[in-house]
Image (cartoon, rainbow, N blue to C red; front, top):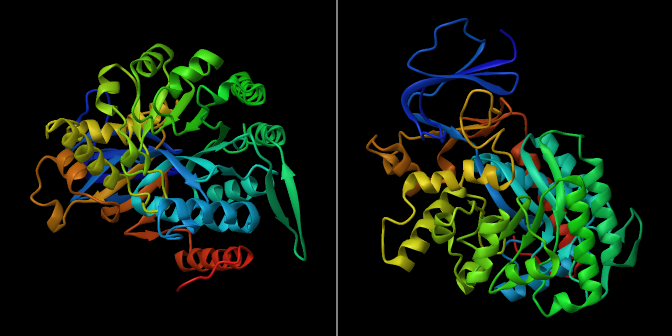
Length: 458
């Protein structure tokens, strides 16, 4: 038996249709896929590589359906959210080069691996709506770095908001040029990236992003034209169209003016929705990325439990990694429960298995990848994490779903596996030098801060 891995003596939280939990079982992996899950001991030809998982939970790798590339190196900048927006926009547009995006990607991937997040959907930029699609070089650097780290990722690329010129500073080894970049140019760059990565790496997908426009903006012919172009190119290629920041009637407005949504739509935040917004979600099959730790969830509420009752797919996102949050999906499970329990004054809202589903199989559905990931079942990709449950805050050993959703955190993840490849074991990255990742990111950070004319504090 070659290219095989056996996980033994684990408590297995499958997240399959029956939500089976196996008290003590084994998982056999071959060729990057799960070939067998069973109770008790494994009987058969044992593979060379085995993981003794006594005292651990084996569960699907966590799926973060909304985050941002770039933000790992803008954490803590500015005293308030608006300050952070201004500083981040300045850095993204005028102070970054491909090395910044590669170094940040490796740092981001390292945190995700250590927190048990095996798949994430990231917008390439954001915050103050600065998407780094002035050319393909930055996104290519990001994607190559993620490929080297071994994670699964969906990267959403697209235009900035229209209405003003966006000036980007592009660096060479000895000089730089300031270039005005149009939304049309950004759509063309995004399209080239989507096409180039369509079959380059089966762990990485490039899809389209589009700003959220309100009803008044959608009457502008230039805005309408850009939105239609992105919509049509996403549909021609059958890829996701990601939007960040729907609220208060914007879903209904985009449906009415653009017919924008279908089952390949992934909409982040979605706060203070109207009855018409909710009707559009039910009718079109658009998916939701709920971000309970995000600033938008302070400004308004995403009706996640009500949407799920309507049959809408609702997943969890971190909106990480800045200005004030991490990639820890366990933290977001806990926050989602408290957020909605407080609203309804009912602690029974979002029980543990439902929270775990939002962070695994519902995330896979949101990304249209449920046939491949999101649950532990024979035939699916072997994206698996092992959580160390023999710890004071996770004791005594009963009801693993409750312990995971209520008490666990990212630091409890012992082992992270993607496509059958062990990326972390015993809390140590297997094929990566974590110190080197940190130092590379620090160099990129200092270089960007100097270019932006900003001071740093060590």
